[in-house]
Length: 307
Image 1 (cartoon, rainbow, N blue to C red):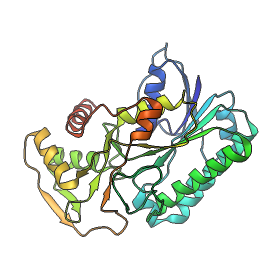
Image 2 (image 1 turned 180 degrees about the vertical axis):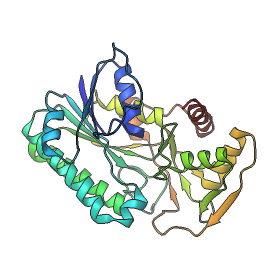
Image 3 (image 1 turned 135 degrees about the horizontal axis):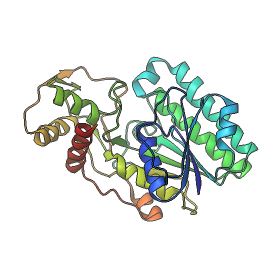
């Protein structure tokens, strides 16, 4: 398959790109002009690193041309920055996505696979674990925009016959996670612990999330390439929850030393608990998460030491 990975130079996109190459697919990445490739690619790896702007329709048309599958993994915000500037969140993420969908109507592609946010589109849970039928009542601008993109994708499929899959990922973590944007508690906490800096915990530390190792996420997206079933929306999570306090305990265990914790007031946009049911994707994709949180933290530590 010829696969276009929009956002292929980022944390999740790079893992998906590596997995697609491992599976023998031809991969084209559309990356920002000044973004340096995250690694060197061998002469036998069918990789094309294309520089361009996701918000530029001309660049999108050029990138989509000739592709069988499009992975939409671009996000210009995280939950906090989206809440701080919801107008930019809509202008960059929602409008950019609508431009992409217009291009997909013009050019024939086999499928678009979109990364949504299992941690924010549902909002406060009415029951646990959260399955795909759970009401969607996001309390962050980030989740609202992700849900809006989902609805436009479903409309694209219904009205114009462009196949689409939506993968609602829980809380991914791994070695390439960007700490400068506070992208994920595991990466931020590990970096602070290794630097000997106190870990800042929002609230009482009992906020609970479904942390999933990045390799398991990439495997799920790779399985989506060949999926031809009737389902369209999938949770990508472990079905297990870990509190922030337990996360710090695990980090102390992995690095073999205590870490100072500083507790700060809880944030209004943080739901108290988010754990995703994964039975649907396990059944439909023949996929399941392989790496538990303790092993995942240890592997992330090794990756950070290598980089």
